[in-house]
Length: 253
Picture 1 (cartoon, rainbow, N blue to C red):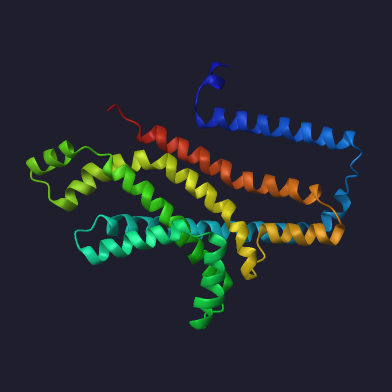
Picture 2 (picture 1 turned 90 degrees about the vertical axis):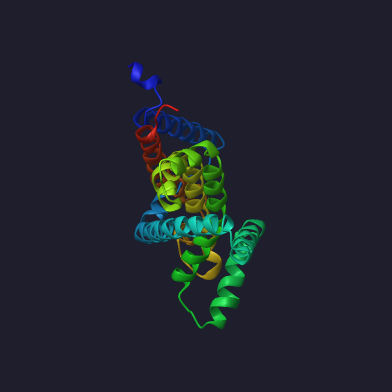
């Protein structure tokens, strides 16, 4: 069983499940000791709403992930542009998105900007706003990864006749991808959790469905425990997949 001491995705997954099970058992025992009355029967009729909210959260998260990676790459490239207006715009946009709360951006983006443009699609607007917000953080992660590549490698690429696009494609991006992967994974996990704020613009995602469930049954833990498990069902596979990519793209430096 020495493989359990490794850092493989399978070992990390097993240890995560064991830890979650241990913490859950401890919490359950704690609330049983204070005679908390569990009411799981009241939760069951809301199972379809819970699944609907989970699927909505999953769809929003996947769409925002793809969009945030595109936004992050464009902001990173713009911030490194030699054209001053583009560089200033990308830098200013990154600073604005990182320096203001997501909640404020959602309220202004939906109730002011989207309303002025007559866009009455909360799912679309929420996904785009979430993608912009997370994309600004990804831009800094990408920028740090690209700038960590030594200048000697760029000079070597020019020495063998590589153009600037070829240098980025064959030399810089493959190495930057590996270095940016851990930070990118952490940011995408945060994106999934930040999607819970979309309820402020009328989207009935997972957290909002749980609030409805708790309000209808006067319960608390019976809704939030499945909520935590539902988020872990998304974030843990994402983390394990990123670990697998890290091992796949690892190489001696």
